[in-house]
Image (cartoon, rainbow over all chains, first blue to last red; front, side, top):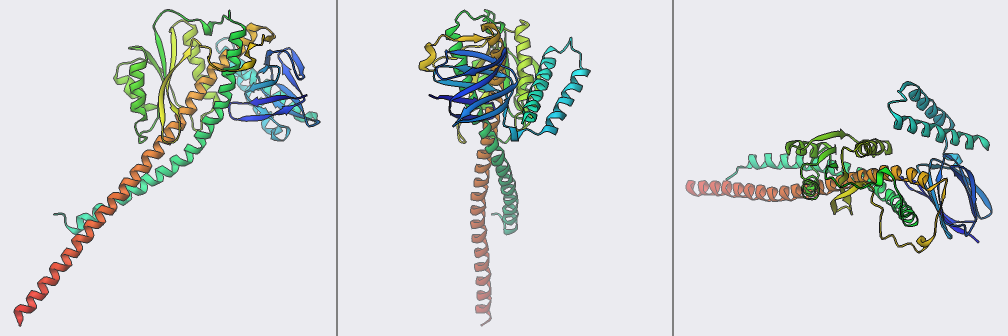
Length: 135
Length: 281
C-alpha cells in the first residue's frame, strides 16, 4: 500500500512520488499519515517532515504552510522545503540573528504583520537548525 | 540622388543600431529564460493551492472570513503591473487598454512599474502606492504588496481589489488580463473526483481558512508579478529581435544601392577617359 505525496513550494515542485507513510509537523503537533487516511486539511508549522520511500526514511525541513490529505494523495504546500545537505548552518544562524535584531528594533504595537513575519522566519530557521544538528 | 559618402555614413549608423538592439535582445533572452522558468514553476503551486481552496469551500460552504466578504459598493482598487523600461513592444499599451475597459471608471491604483504609473497619473487616477520589484521577483516583495492591498480592503476603503497584469502564454504571445483579488473568489471547475470527501480540519476550519486565505492572496500577487515579468522579457526579446532583423535588411538594401552607385561612378569615369582618348586621336 502506498500513496502519492507531492511537496510544492512557490519556487518549484520539490517532491512527487509514491510513499508508504508521511509524518507532518501539524499546527497541534506531529501527525502520521498512512494510506487511506480520511480527508483532512491541516495547517503546518515550521518543522521536520519525514516520509518512507522504498524502506528508507527521508527528512525535509519545511516552513509553514498546509497539507491536504485525501484517500489516495497528500499535497504539502509550504514556503520552503530543504534537505539536510541544503542547509548551511552559518547562514541560518546569521538569518536568525538578523531577524531577531530587526524584531528588537521595530515597534511591536504598530507593525503586527512585520512582527508575525519575523517570528515566522525565526521559527523556520530554528527548525532547520534543529533538523540539521539532529544528525 | 544621395552621394556615396552619405550612404556609407547611413550604413554605419544602422550597423551601430543593429549592434545595440542585438545586445539588448541577448540580455532580454537570458533574463527571459529565468523569468519564464519562475512563472511556470509557480503555476504548479498555484494549481494545487486552487485545488485545496476549492475542496475546502465545497466541504465547508458556510465559510466566513473578512477576506471573503463581498460588498455592494463599487469603490475599486487596481494593482497595475507594468514595466519600468520601454522597448518591449505593445504590452504596456495593451495592458492600459484592458485597464480602461475592465476596471471601474476612476478606480484608484497601486502600481508596479513606471510606464503605466505615468500614464495613470496623466489620466488623473489616484495612485495610492507605487512599488518597485527586483529581478528575479522575490516573494517578500509580493508579500509587502499583498499586505497593503489586504489592509486597504479590510479597512473598508475599497469594496473590490483587482490585479491587472500581462499573463505569459508563450514567447510570442502575452495576454493582458484583469483578475479579482479581493474578496477572494473560490476557484471553480477543478475536476477532482476525490472532492466529494468530507474534510476534517486541523486545528479548526476557521484556523485553516485564516492560514490559507492570506497565503492565497500573497501567492496570487506573486504569480501575477512573475507572469508579468516573464511577459516583459519575452516581449522585449521579440521586439529587439525584429528590430535587429529590420536593421539587417536595411543594411542589405543600402549596401546594394551603395554598390550600384559605386559601379555607376566607375562606369562614368571610364567613359570620360575613353572619350578623352578618342578626342586626342
